[in-house]
Image 1 (cartoon, rainbow, N blue to C red):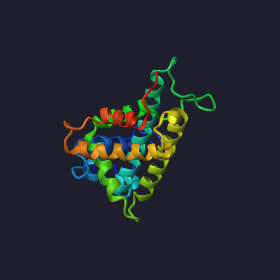
Image 2: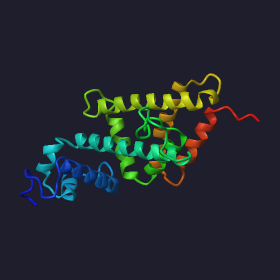
Image 3: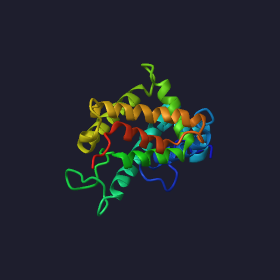
Image 4: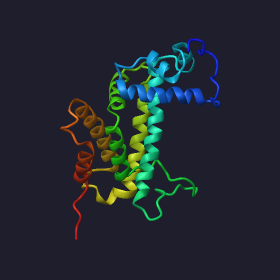
Length: 219
């Protein structure tokens, strides 16, 4: 295994090694969390040397950002499927070009699916929580990633809330307000859940918030 640092192993398609490293990182961080995972452990699980890993990801932070980007993409796809599950014919919200469902339209069902997926991987939730707090400082390698991530989420949630829930939000609560609150509550619930998973039911509490932001239905 020590001679694998610079050569592509047989069976890897172009980009395949990078994907294999990210998959290994996902598994390793899910098992060991932020402090319990090293680049050496990820490299070993991926079947390469640490030097080989550093060729693709020059630091632990760079690897974590790439891993979180991959996780976000997977969550968006899962959310789009969840949104479409209850619609006749499935498929989620139609894309403007008639192609794949629009993963940016994340509604309540999609949010609940993302939260449910997160409860299955506490190690990754811990990684996200620790790294997002560290990255608040300007100059941190992940500062730009998290700043862009929050901006994108606010835009996506605002769009969905305006188009699907705008008429049901409580007076004085704008879609922009509700979007920022959703993100804040989801991240805050994750912190509490990491301390005591049995005491915090994230999917249920997300539903409580959505109900609190909406006006009661009228008959």
